[in-house]
Length: 331
Image 1 (tube, helix red, strand yellow):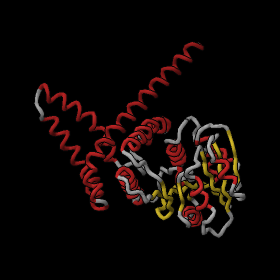
Image 2: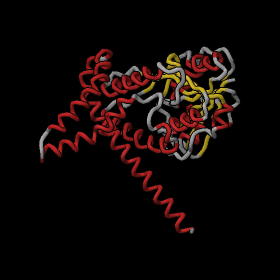
Image 3: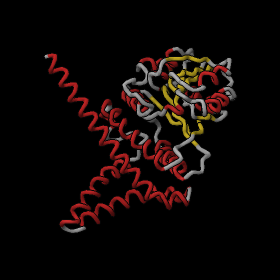
């Protein structure tokens, strides 16, 4: 038995496509679909009620981590699948997600992939970013990174780990944090690029950059809880980390150039251009227009991600100081 969990919050515009797809899977075994309505105020619950075979759980708004946990802990299946209310799984998605568990009894988690049919510049760039990360994950026999849009876990392991960390108030990095915890226990998780869900990526530059800032900001908390992953994980290319280190150096060297000479700035800029060249080249091979625009898009992305990481570090420092103050008052 397999259980599919879909958290939903004001998902009236997208959830029908998700549920229609889940109701028409080619999987031959038994499965249930559970939607956890996380306090929606739109037509979400009404739309879900139109699917008699889908189990609807309603709760007051408590965030996506809590919603996913609620669905998982009430599920009947031995294998738990997650997708999001704005995703449309392929017809064979459930079969592809469950297949690795039957092939290898040591597997406790499976990750699938995103695709999109969008033609906007920002959305096409996002898709190429994901594909670059997928190329990295294909090289490993195991992974330590499973996103909620296409995720599967053995229920016993998910329960052992107490599910997603509910200290994450938004849908961002709680899936990373759980993956890191599972990996740290020595459990085996794998990547299946044949398990596909279609998604609506950010379709404007502003929306894209806002999302990158949010991801970077909350990634700090995930790494803080799992510091062993700060050096490397199976999802994030090491070149991106070098790019983020170089961003402040570019500005520092630019200021230095005003008062001294531009040698340092020239060196730092040259290194940065060399690092992003490989990403640009890969994008050019797949999408010429995006490849031409990618140096600018990558530079903007790196700036925003650095700002997000800095914001996350500042928040972590403030939280730590507040906690120390709290204990000092009690003492």
